[in-house]
Each structure stands twice: as structure tokens, then as C-alpha cells.
Length: 398
Image (cartoon, rainbow, N blue to C red; front, side, top):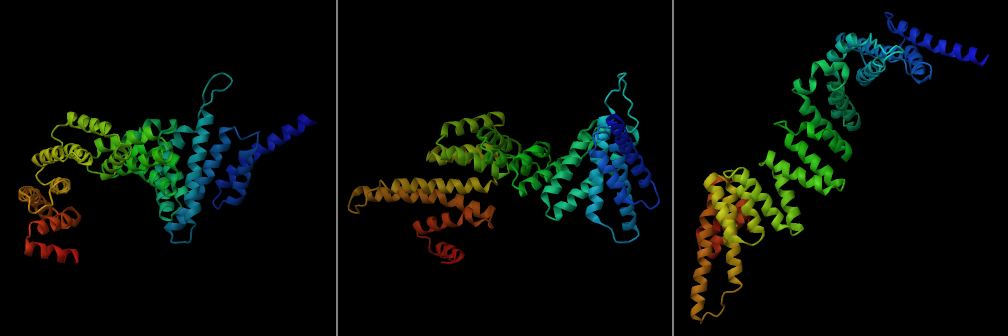
């Protein structure tokens, strides 16, 4: 009797799958009934491991999406969220159906009767996964947006779509990976931030931001080694993006790792001796170490390579002012001493040396006042340049 009841229940579940399939194929399907039947079958031990169950579930989801799309074309009211969710579910169900259909039978044979048709459907509907992700992203539902972007990427790697080679041919893949990473960042989910960041790092438009997110995630997770590695790789790949340089220098400075910092700079220069940014990095490190003479040498090398590097001009000016500050602390204050006049002349020379570099920085980037306004204020004041000093005062609102 127990065996008979079990057999009867299994038969009922198989019948539920067939009934659900039949309902979905009707002109006006009762989706609530079809979904109830198939959801029970998806949970039942008798049918949950059957590829047919998952395939029918996918067909129901696809049919629902088609009906909602039809409403949209006819300017009728339709459920946007349920429509996108049906596409998401369709992908999930068809992928599972394909996985189960690939399991060899008792004779060791694989009879996957779903792959050809479902592969064509998944290929056609991939853009709607992307549209769904964008929709939820714009709705600030970042968790759901990540799910859609993730399924877009993961399905592209699945065996059913392997022949399409989407991971190499899909030109949007890097940007989708970035938006998945961005959605995870908005949710402050560090593990998810790392899941696809590497897939986006070569994208010319957003790659640097993906690497920035990856670095942040590694740091938040306490992985200092990977954090530093990502910063170093970021500088090498995107030298113009200040995030990597700034955080790496901060780390070296805060941890008194000047030798490591210099070794890193030397390694970069060895790879590309004419790279103005690498030369600038080395100069900046010298400046942080209060080795102003060497800093000036490498800033000048930077300018020789790139005559419009405003930050290098500004920092040369600053280095001369720092030399002036250091010298003033040792200079004699006795105006009756013969040394006083000599020391004042030396001090004046520092300001005179700084002046053209600050002025060049201003010429190159007049809108970026932080590069030159404070420096010129000190230079013009100490050189008694009345008209120039008054103009700077006005600019500073003094």
C-alpha cells in the first residue's frame, strides 16, 4: 500500500508538470495555476531532478514575458517588475534543465533534447537580462541589479551558450561587470565587489574605477597584500588615475616604508624610463622624505619629458619653499652680524627660484588654484613684489 501511494504521488507530480505545460500553451494561460503546479513539481522529490520539470518552468516564464511584452506593444498596462523577473526565472530554469539533461542515462548516453531550442531562446533574450539589471539599478535596488548583471555574465559562461563564445565576443561584458561591481559597492558588499571587478579592469572607460573598487574591497576585508598589489597594478595600468598613487603613497608614508616606495618607483622607471608619471612619483617620494634636492632633480626630469606637467612645476616651487623654511630655521637673526646679509640673500634666492615654477603652474592650470596661489602668495610677499602680491591677496579674498 505504501509503494502504491508513493507511485500514485509520483504520477501526480509528473501529471502536474504536463498540466502546467498544457496551460502555458493555451491562448489565454492561467499563469497563477500553471505556476502553482510547476512550483510544487520543482519542490517535489519525484520531479525536482527531472530536466523536463525545469524546462516547463522555463517555458511558463517565457510565455508570461511574451504576454507582458505584447501588452507593452499594445500600450496596455503591464507589470514591469514581474516581466523582468520572468526573464530572470526563465534563464535560471533553462540553465538548470540543460544541466540535468546533460547527465548520462543508465546506458551512459546523453539525450539533451532541450539544448538547441533553449540555446536559441537564451541567446535572443540576453539583452533583456541586461535591461532588467539597468531597470533595478535605476530603481536603486542594487541587490537585484547585481543578480541580473551576474546572471548575464554567468550564463555567458554556461555550456549551453559555450559555442557563442560571449566572454570573448561580447563587447559589453567589461561594462556589465563594472556595473555589477558598482551595484555591489553601493550595497557595501565587499565579496561581491571582487566577483567581477577583474573582468572589467581592461575596459578603457570604466576599468580604472573597477580596479578602485577592487582595491577598496581588499582593504575592507583586511587583505593588505592584495590591496597593495591592486594599487600597484592600477598605477601601472592607469597612471593618470590619482586614486592608486595617492593611496599607495599614503601607505608607504604612514608605515615608514620609504625604501619599498623608492624600489617600486625605480622598478616602474626601469620598465619605462621616459614615463613622466613614474618620474613624478619618484620626485614626490623624495619630497616626502625631505630630500628636496633630489626631488627637484626628478621633477625637472618630469618636465623635460612633459613640459605641461603643471603639478611638477608646482612641486618644484614647493620644494624651494621647503628649502627656504629649513634654511630659515638655521639662519642668523642678528642683523648686526656679517652673516645676516648673506643668509637673507640665500633665503631670497630660494624664493626667486620658486617664482617661475609657480607662475608656470598658474599659466598651465589657472583654474586649479591649489597648485599655485599659496605658493605665489609666499613668494611675492618675501620678494616684496607689491602689485603682484596685492593681486594674489584679492584672489584669495584677503
